[in-house]
Length: 213
Image 1 (cartoon, rainbow, N blue to C red):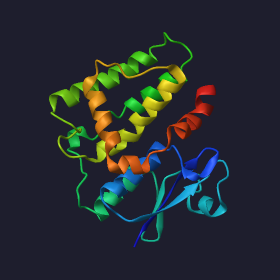
Image 2: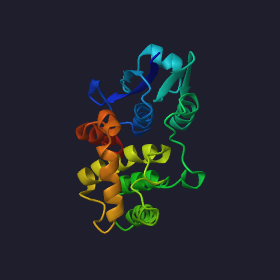
Image 3: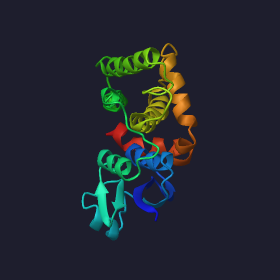
Image 4: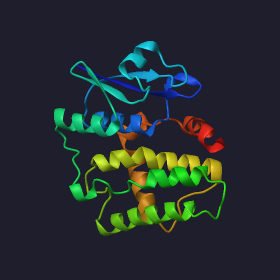
């Protein structure tokens, strides 16, 4: 039986998959495990009543397991791993939080109006740490040859970082971070990623309110 999942619809295009990196993370996990699922696209600016009943905070993603709707991508991914253990996506525990500060650092830099406030430097430090890890652990993924949960969490965030910073700040990841470049190329080429990513225009549209705030 297909798992039901509610994810964000694109801004201004309610029939097209939207730009939520946490929704994509859940979809990636289902795809990598070959779990059949039924996708509901939720228009975040005009949420249907039935959705508000299952997700009172109005947040996506939410997934239905055994007739119960569950929110929060961390929880969702953990339940998918328990229910569908093969193929395993479990990380070695010491890698589980690797790169976890990249997304907040990216958001701070993206929203920053002051080029000297240190937000760019903070993001670079996080990306350098990821580069160093990939260099010393052989890659191509965080835990080695195989994709694990930490890669599926990072992939959508690195995609947002790439698309939004190039568009709004004409900023790209420095060429010197060759391992990060290789890693993102490998992640974005995954069949599961291609199937679950939002188009660039919708990623940009999703960030406009935050950049202008």
